[in-house]
Amino acid sequence: MNKEMYISREYKIGTKEKISIANNFIHDYYGQFLYTNKMENSSFFINASLPYEILDNNKRMLRFDNYNHIAEIKVEINDRIMKFTGLNSRKIEKSIEIAKSVKIKKSEILLFKISNNKFSELPATSVFYMPIKEIITKVYNKGSMDIKNRTSNNKLIKYAKFLEQLGIIKITVDGETYKFSIGEQAKLIEIKSKNPVMDLFDYSLLHGYDYLYNDIGIRSLSPYLKIANSLYYNVSKLGKNITVNENELNEFYNYMYNTKMEDYKFDVYLDNLSRVNIIDKKEDIVTGNRGIMEKLLKA
Image 1: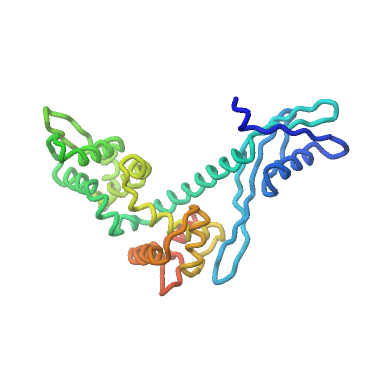
Image 2: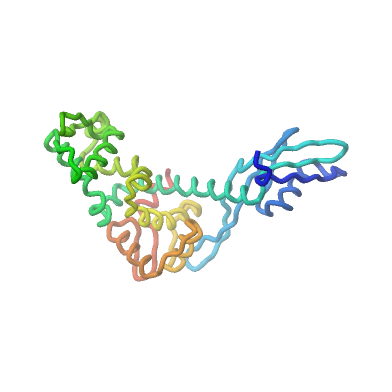
């Protein structure tokens, strides 16, 4: 055990309830927005309720993001003394950051799912994900696709293997030739689809987004999804559509993703999101697309 990762503190029990003493310890060493509401004989879990401001029509409203079971604290009781042992504050902060990232990622995935394939219409998606769309289009329309195992085709083969993992295509190797055919998952999607090629493409982006982002290194869609999510995260929290200006939305984007984007770049992304009806934008005023907003609130 790395002792630098942990702290250990003692408190006198006195007349206070044990859970009150536990919360005193949490507030002393981890911060006022962390707490516990249940304590067993030998341990308890830290929860967090972190405040942030939501903007709507120039009105600022305070909301809280709640994260449960951030970390476990061990408790020992001897001679009217309670001893608490747990991760140091830096590790607790890191655990909260991870929990926040997980929650934000879930909201991104939900937004992508309910967007009616609108993200696939973005120019950046068409350009950078074109090899995926080409493979899907040719295999679906022609029934198969053959390519030679050459250095010039390495990237195409990599995309094909990605699609094989999703069940969109099957790959067989015949000497120096890779043969692609329709996969089982593609057949299932085709049964319910009015536009199979586009639906297969959207399925590959949705279910393979992390792989495309982290392993293949195509990150063109990420800024669009994050900026849109910065708006719809507020919509979800308030339970209604919101209206903000570009600077206010950029502030919230900075809060959610801990990064600042230059205003002119942010404006370009918003313009593109508006063109494919992911958001509604008039001059520098931004609001949620009604169709996406309604689906989000029902989800």
